[in-house]
Length: 168
Image (cartoon, rainbow, N blue to C red):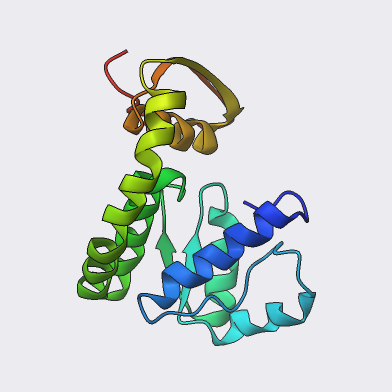
């Protein structure tokens, strides 16, 4: 998830913190967050470990050492739909479905309106080719399809999860 120490990735981490705070959860330890490594000691106090795609072995080792429960999050939080699915998976695993529903119901309409113009102008009925890491390719393909784009070719390096990107 973290591949460079730049503002957009720092913003991704900040947004994950904000989303989890809406569920009354805190994001205390992020491996490769661009921050000091001091916060990594917090994993020993974790109740849950979010297992992002391709991090299964690491999550397993950390869980054994900390007794934290692993929460597999098979979908990356990419695009509005992907972010909602990601947050719902975390909420279901932590018993916070009601908080998630309130948060999504409160925020999603504003975000849908905000992206409608961009979706119409830059995505609707346009052809896309995606070639990247498998899980990111699938997440990007779903986001493009949800915004009205047509995914003509999806190529994923490594494991490629199920990627429903429309009737193409």
